[in-house]
Length: 256
Image 1 (cartoon, one colour):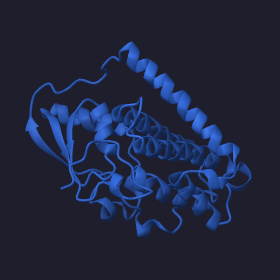
Image 2 (image 1 turned 45 degrees about the horizontal axis):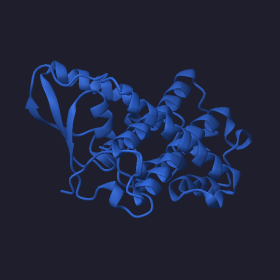
Image 3 (image 1 turned 90 degrees about the horizontal axis):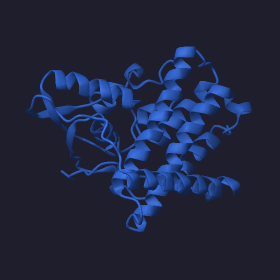
């Protein structure tokens, strides 16, 4: 499931057609499968998605969006050295290839995809800062849902670019660094909310409403499936959020 470390086999440049996890030749070896879930019970009906939010929750979401914009502005007004470690990891990987996050270096499609990836990484850095303060004002669930939305936006950028056939030779310059930077604090397989919704729908057809995410890593996939309406428990011998400086946690994970 969600990766807790970058894959060494992905250190070389990915081809323009290999950005989707299921198309990677090493994807199965990397995580066993895009997802490994064990059904704990078969309960007809299941948990329904689309739960309405209270006014207080909506207000907190707006405040979090504002705080994130302010955090991004503060990071980007200064030089790259002021970025958090997760966002800095992407910038460092690009720098090693003598590539900058600019349309001139990576093209318009690369810039759009990298910008979406950087948004997700910057939010993971903000999450880490708030975690050090014991999450004042914002619940871990609110932060995790925001992270899932940002990662989903990155996946959608990739999928849209593929559908338009906009991946060219320039993608080799940025695709592997982007995947490696996102892997540790999100996931290596490119699974977004639409895929999680489809998985949840198929499981509900089988009468399954509760699943166990083993090797959950960051808990991103468990979060996406929860947002899709399933009841999820998750475990990992080494949850990603326990990895100093680069890890993140988007779901309660039992360390086992």
